[in-house]
Length: 315
Image 1: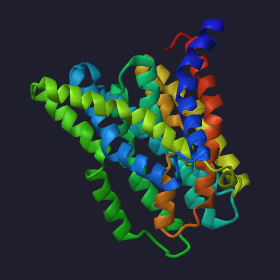
Image 2 (image 1 turned 90 degrees about the vertical axis):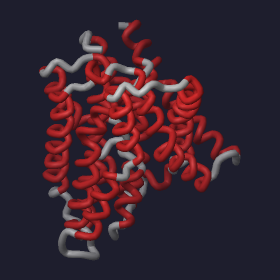
Image 3 (image 1 turned 90 degrees about the horizontal axis):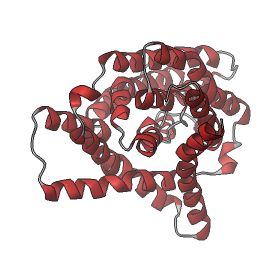
Image 4 (image 1 turned 60 degrees about the horizontal axis):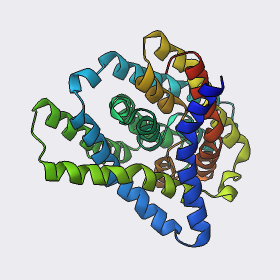
C-alpha cells in the first residue's frame, strides 16, 4: 500500500508543485495576470500542439489508435453533459444553469491530462485519442448550453455556433494532432535539426502551462458563487469518474489509456470555459469559482483516484 501511495504522489505532487511555483512567482512579482495569459496562449497555440505532434511522430500510429476507446470518450462526454444538465435543474436561478453544465463536464485534458501521461509514461499519445473523441463535443455543447441559458438571448446563437465550429477546425491542439497523424501515416522522415527543435519546444509546454495556471489562481474568485461552485466541483472531480470510469475498465482500458480517461473525467475545469461564458453574455463568476476550486481540490482527488486504480492493479 505504501508503494502504491508513493507511486501516486510521484505522479501528482510534481504537477501541483509547478502550479504552486506559479502562485509563488505571482506573489513575488515575477508573474502578473497579463504574463500568465501570455503563457497560457503560448502553451495552447504552440507548446501543446508541438508536444502532441512529437508524441505521435515518435510512436507507431497503429499501436496508439483505438477506435473503441475514442468512441468511449465521445459517449462518456455526451452522457456527462446530459448528467450535469440534469443536476443543473436543481438551481432555481436559471442564469446559472448554462455555466453549471459547462464547468461540470469540461476538463483541462490537453494540459493536465497530457502532464499526467508525460509524468507517468513519458509521452502523451493517449491524450490525443481523448482530444479527438471529446474536445469537438466540448466546444459545440458549450455553445448550445450557454446560448440556451444566456440572459441576453432566447435561443441558440447561430453566429456563436458557427464560430465554435470554426474554432474546432482551427484549434491549434487538434491541428497538432492532425499534422502528427498525417506525418506518421505518410512516414515522412524527421531531420535531426527539426527533431531537436521540436523536442525543445515540446519540453516547455507542461511546466509553463502549469505555472501559468497556478499564477492565475485567485481564492477570492473561488468563493464568488460557493454553493453551486462546490456542487459543480463535486460533479467534476468525483461523480463523473465514479459513474463512467468503470465502463473504461470493463472495456479493457489500462495504463496510459485509463489514466487519459481519468483525466478526461476528473481533471479540473479548463480555464477556457470562463472565456466562453463571458463571451456569450454570462456573468462568469460561477465559472471562475469552479475553475479555481477544481484546480485546488484536484490535488487530493486525482491522487486518490490514481491510488485506487494502482491498488486494483489497473495502472
